[in-house]
View (tube, helix red, strand yellow):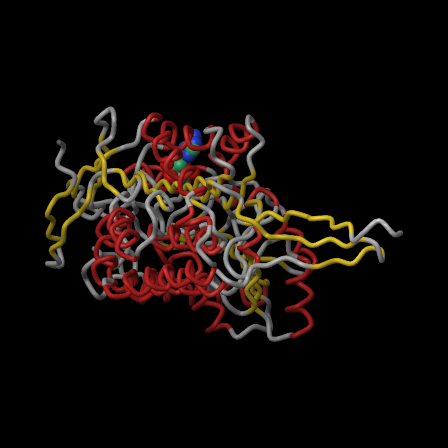
Length: 498
Ligand code: ADP
């Protein structure tokens, strides 16, 4: 029997037992083919652990477990209120161990421990807790038609949900997916990203401890092309909920068409941030810096295209440069001074560096940064480009790193047109003190979310998602429940007299 856990000591001294198997039917099992995924500390490039990677056969086992749980009375007939109690318990258990989870995600992903603890964990805990409250509040309607008939609707779970999550917020992305799906009574097979496979397996131990019946939540690691694709194509999976790149989302949509699967997609972005002459400049600089440089720029909603009105353009550049120098401290996950940790993997690091090279060779000016940090680890200097043309790759393509372009504009119409000149439509920011302009621009911008005098606000009570090629459907808030229920209409004939 394979050894399915390993004792680890993180660089901050935290010791814990890391499960390494696939969590199916509330038990850890080995992968059928023995394939493994290696997890790397991006600051040191050394191996943290190896975990089991699901094969197609393993995915099938997980799906069968979820299918059986869906029909099992311990879940099917569990009142919504009791489902909510299980979820609230899960949130409590997560909270009890928040330091451990923050340690694992910092180690595996490269984000500062302090950020994982103060941002990722409250978000994950808050999301599960928020949706625990919805578990007994999703119901249908009674609709009168004629005096002889009426109809009512029931909101039922969709069934077995395949969830595929990315590596930039490992635990909170899992919570965003698990919360609404469980609240609505579905069963789940969730696959973590191969770059960050660790924390979700510790979460699995809490699923069992909280008391969820076997098979309700199955947690697997695995490679996208193998395990991810098998999940998407499995005929007994009713829906796929995906967060990741637009290119992968497009493949998923194609594969899901085979069985006409319901899908929600949360994908890439190249979100604009507009700064008008009449803004509070200090605030604009502070938020626009955070909007791209937080989480190493590995944020789908990152406001990576800054457009500044021409009268204040030079002043904005000066202040932005100072902000990068003062705030963007690059370092490892454990230094409390660190603002920007290492990029998640060598692949991402190389990709970002190649974008920086493209920017230089296409003729943009490097205002600051412009390369890697010397030494071990996937560290990149926060990089700002000016003299950027709207046709350049660094202006058009999602870089997913600490790289931003800052251009100038003259009129509001021009700013809105250029903001919308993209295939993406995830987030957008507008900085102005003019109330009318703020709301006018917010309405005109093609994006799923707009921040007025801010960037990156994200709250489990508020819908999150994109338009255009940034996604389909919404997560979080009440809107997030739509993706996990289906409405059944029941027609009632009251009699034969009419
Ligand atoms: P990135 O390019 O940033 O790594 P991806 O969109 O490729 O992002 O990955 C996000 C998630 O999608 C991961 O869990 C990954 O394993 C999964 N994935 C990647 N390729 C596929 C695929 N062809 N089918 C299903 N899932 C996939």
